Length: 254
Image 1 (cartoon, helix red, strand yellow):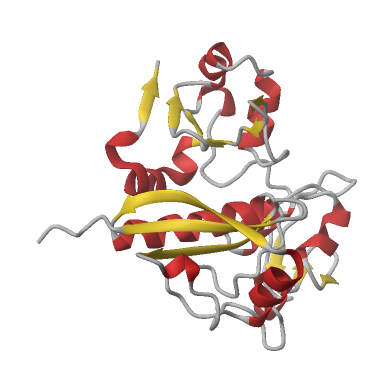
Image 2 (cartoon, one colour):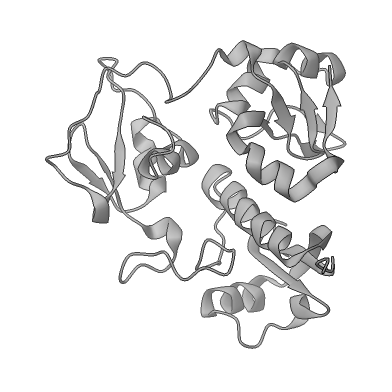
C-alpha cells in the first residue's frame, strides 16, 4: 500500500519581527488547533500574534517527521532562533534536562577547562557557534572551535560529561571530513546540488569563501535572493535526510 502524501510541515512566525517560533507537522487542519499546545507556544502566540507558512507539503507521514526534525534543528540549533518546541520533533519525547524549559536550556561543558555553561548561547562566549557545539555534544563532529593555544575545543552535554573521558585536543579536522574545496554542496532553500563551491558561485554571484564558511556553519547564510537568505551545507552531511525528504526533486549542477 502506497503511503498517502497528505502531510505537511508548517512554521509559526511572530507578527512583531516575523521570526519563527514553532515548527509543526500535520494534515488537514492540524495547524489551526492551538488550544492544547504547550504554554511556551501559547504565551508567544498571545503576546505577539502569528502568521503560518507551509514549508513543505504533499509528504508522507514519515517524510513529514523527517522534515520536522530537520527544520527544528536548522532553525533552533544552527540559526539560533528561540523556538517554543519542547521536543526535537519526529514524534519523539522531550529531550531536556530535568527542570529545563526546552532543549536550548541544556547545559554544556567545555572539557578542556571543565567550564559549565547553562545554555548554548552562554557557551558562544568561547568563540564557537551554537550549531557546532551541538554537533560536538552529539559526537557528530570531533570538536567545535579552538582555544587560544590552538587546541581543539571539545564539548559535552553536562548530564553526559565524564571528567575521566580521554580527549585528543590536538585533533586537526572533523571526523571523516574531506577537502572542503572538492565536496559537493546543497542550497537548502531550493535543494540544488553543486559539484563544488566554485560551480555554485558560478550560478549564484556569491563569494566562494562565504559559501564555504556557511557550509562549515561559521556563518548562518551566504548571499540573498530577493531578500531571502541563502543557506548552504555540504551535501554528504545531510545526504540521507535530503534524499529522504526531497527524493528525485533534487537537481544536480555539474
